[in-house]
Image (cartoon, rainbow, N blue to C red):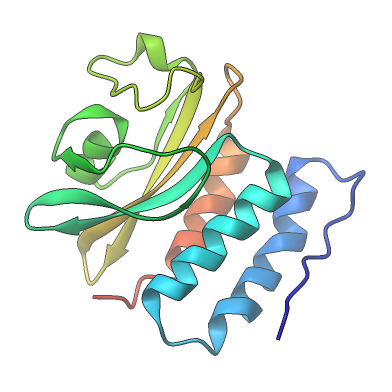
Length: 160
């Protein structure tokens, strides 16, 4: 069955998150497949906000490995502590980067990326992956994004 998002076109970013979150919860709530839920979550975020790149990396064999995403091709593997994704994995904390050029060790998977937010997926006290969102605009992410993206990532706290 096809699903459609209902997001007010004139809404500001926070209003869009408020409209989107229950729809993501309903979309993934009955589905038990973790990868399918990541895929639909990435698609919903990409469709709603038009971010340059939205996707997940999952921890496998002590590396972050590319998982479902929306956007141009991406780096396939990232080491712990490397780049924004690896730093968020290592610290188990959300990282907002207003200008990726200013982030020490930033991994440039695509030169069009200008700002980034990375939110860890934490299950049973362990980081099992990260949600990575890139924008082609500087300073595109704020505490509003942190608040709602962390809430979305909590939907995956029971994964293993």
